[in-house]
Picture 1 (tube, each protein chain N blue to C red):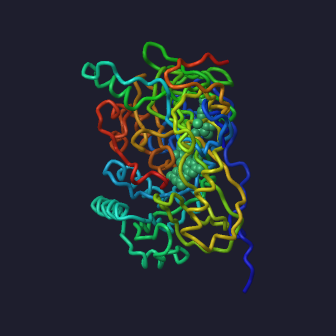
Picture 2: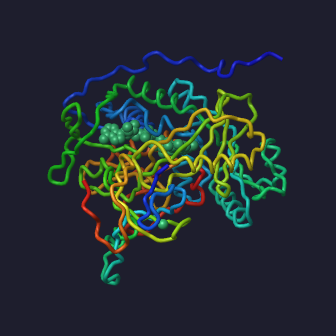
Picture 3: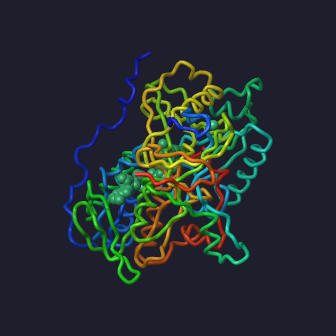
Length: 410
Length: 92
Ligand SMILES: Cc1cc2nc3c(=O)[nH]c(=O)nc-3n(C[C@H](O)[C@H](O)[C@H](O)COP(=O)(O)OP(=O)(O)OC[C@H]3O[C@@H](n4cnc5c(N)ncnc54)[C@H](O)[C@@H]3O)c2cc1C
Ligand SMILES: [Zn+2]
């Protein structure tokens, strides 16, 4: 047997992919936040709508926020029609994205298993499978034995504290390489003329007669016909500059990786009940995460007991991990809404748009939200797929409650 | 991991506590008179500052009592703890 160097088959790190830009005095559209969503929005503004006089303003370096910190799970098996609409749109875009961007994304449709451990879990899961199928989303209910066939290292014995009673499976779900996704969008957008401006923090929004006219930044004022917020964990702070309050709470969300291991884990496994999810990255690390830290915080680190609990949950499901070592843990700041669904659309301030509230699960939506948010910003009207996710649903009461399909499952 | 000074028990590990979100959110005095916007504010909107935040904690694995804290969400530093019913202390 020849020894495989983990990661040997991955592409090398690229040289410079986009030109660094100096801020101009005015743009048609200023995007606040250079994470995945801001970059994808810039790309589709240019590509789908021909709007190229656009700047992406990023306070740190491009995609150094949650885009650099997420565990890259992609799926569309949410419960409600509204959610399936936007997440499945995103998944379809993922399926052609490498060709579209002309950049490798290591998009791997290795499937996602969501395990059930109680009768209530089973009922909820089967209901979700049925709802998914009615919406044309690939979804299957698997028995414990079928779970074992998909992922042989899961312990399905009845003797554990919370035995596996089955699981939902979405074969088209999977993972991608988050950094490459950001670089691919940034390069493609820059090639179409978008300015990528790093180390440029937005410190104020200029509002005159109920209309936004520009932004104040650490690199000077910049005028804008339209401003599109995509600041994820900092959305409340930035929207606050225009007096817009959002129903968000910012929480740390942690993840961790093991050292590099030979391939042992062929899919993605998530369990809301024992509260952990695990995949194996292309390079070989086991990638694990769980839920948010309970307390609000803007610090990109969380509490250690959260890590301890997710590790014990992982061991219960995967006894084979007992001797794996933790290599690295980290955290991001995620913006959580009351109904575990995002907020995308118009604000009470004219020409100011908001995209936020993706909380623990917005990576998978990156191309879909970029597509729809670009439409919203370009036309001034919500795209039909993000119309249900308007800010005013909290007043009308038409919430899109995805706590069941979101929770630990990102 | 936070070290949280319970006003009754003293400093204890965060894992002993349950979080209760923003403090000093009063139930509407006249619920029947609220507009939809006012209900939305009460039900769904909470402050989310990057900075000082008055919040509730319950010492669930200790004395089981609720209390309030003023914590800086940018640094996690706890500036004050005080009992339910007391006004928010002035902190720097
Ligand atoms: C540990 C972890 C695991 C996750 N796992 C998954 C997963 O498996 N699947 C999934 O779908 N999602 C997952 N997520 C969620 C996902 O990462 C986010 O929902 C998504 O990245 C948010 O969109 P974004 O990429 O634009 O955010 P970000 O990358 O955070 O972009 C926002 C940017 O705005 C910038 N910014 C903020 N304020 C300002 C300002 N004033 N001026 C200029 N710039 C500003 C920030 O610096 C940041 O770069 C996870 C998140 C975390 C933290
Ligand atoms: Zn106590």
